[in-house]
Length: 187
Length: 260
Image (cartoon, rainbow over all chains, first blue to last red; front, side):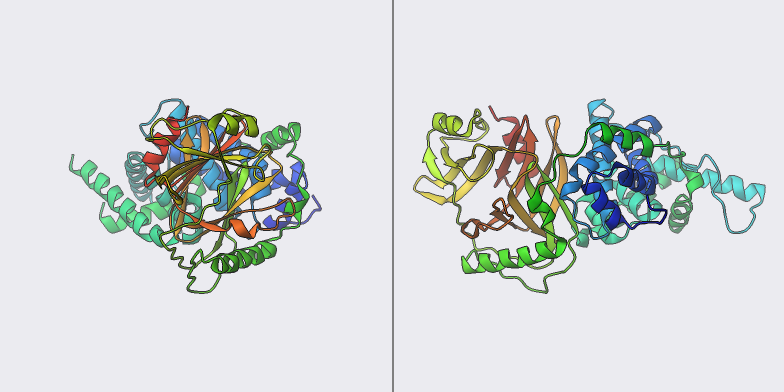
């Protein structure tokens, strides 16, 4: 690299000319998002790692068809999510695995008391447990909007759905999540 | 937990500490792609900038109007080109945001009618036919798509009116360096990744998209511009398949699985 932070468009142009190091830079930039997307689908760290890596490799060979306009991330995530789904189907694990988020307590703005910390961790585990029982589509739309903070447009591209349906799909997914949480709490 | 608290918890879970640490992927990916470089970049693609594609789209839309394919585009053609996907030989562009209102009839130029045996001979591979659909279909061959030409297997509503096709299955051998068909979708066309057997593909549904052939310079074959309905696309064993006209993804999958 040139010692300067290149934009996605410049990196993609270099990749299209066969610069594997430019692609490594792109991978570093988006590997967290890709890995977390794959983890949302698979619920397995090992499967997520394989799916993310394979997704990046497939994206490299498909990048000739990508048009640079700043939307590389959702384009990539669509490929990674598809790879993760394919791997889950191929190993015959249709049931969602347990998402193990929030093993470490997330930081909060003010120093939390031990009780607050324990409560926050328990809440996050309950939500993660409920999430793992939703469909992959529901997990992805919630994950894209809350965890990866994709815009509505990016979410639409990443999920291959129409822009106008993102809000309604997210709303329905959140409603199902809340229902699962309420059911858990009643039982 | 109150329902409104779920939002707060979800927002906290976005924090890095809430996730398993991301394993080092970048170096492994680089090593893998270095071992198998990208296919040679075709010159015509380098000449086609995003701006160029916007011009291409406008030209395509204008041509479509001239050919009375009956586009009525309301709203402004959006400048952003959001995405580009596709399978070998077919490119999918997401280029504009407008309403497209097709007339019921679609003009389809499929090429010259041939027998199945002749189609296989000309194309250089065995043409597969879906057993799921009631036949008999008609076979058509055109030489200007694909490595050895493209074969269309058409199931018409009427034996005498091939312009009204219920389901169309097209098959052609494609080079990874070449693009023969361009699809321009709009915001009302849903593009979904799907698995067709062991292969990955796309399901385009919702609003019709524009379909046209391009030549080796990336120029549009004006006479080929038309609107296409729901389409399932995938590549298998070096052959690119396209099923158009199935009302649902499930039905398209049934047709795909029945190819023999």
